[in-house]
Length: 195
Image (tube, rainbow, N blue to C red; front, side, top):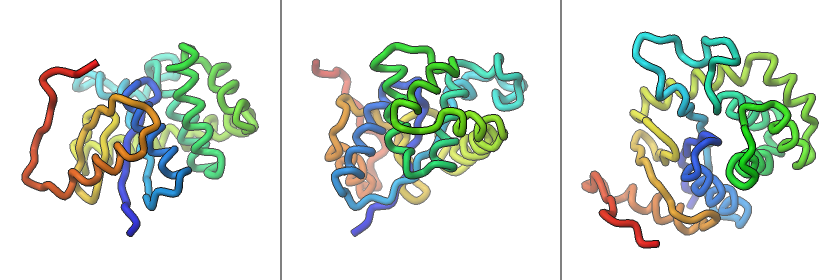
């Protein structure tokens, strides 16, 4: 039975990276999931009330994660067959290589490394479509699911913010999805994290 769900991401967050890598590798292992990848801007979350949203600001005033989200959305929507590889490469640029994902050269290197034409992706970003999509999908996620961070898993109209402690464990995603069946559960949080 196919399990449809959405999961949010921002390339800045290491917990989003853990979840996304588990989801991507679950898809590659043949898990029967129907996944919607939802961009969510952590830069926008920190905008003070009354200030302009990040997507209405000049590029150099949008924050450290918006450009990478634009590149991820550009690949997801214009080059969907390369999205999973590019998605992981963008996370790796930030979390494995410690590079600044606000730097277009870093993003170009990441997508080129997974056999994408960086000029084609940059042209899609320059079209403005990815930024408009980010604004729409971020706002929709806040309105529909009261989303406040990443990663958030969403099934139907319910959503949970989850911090998975390990990367590349697709069965952990199944465990998260299983908890959606427990409708009387509101919060389940360890007081200490075993290391």
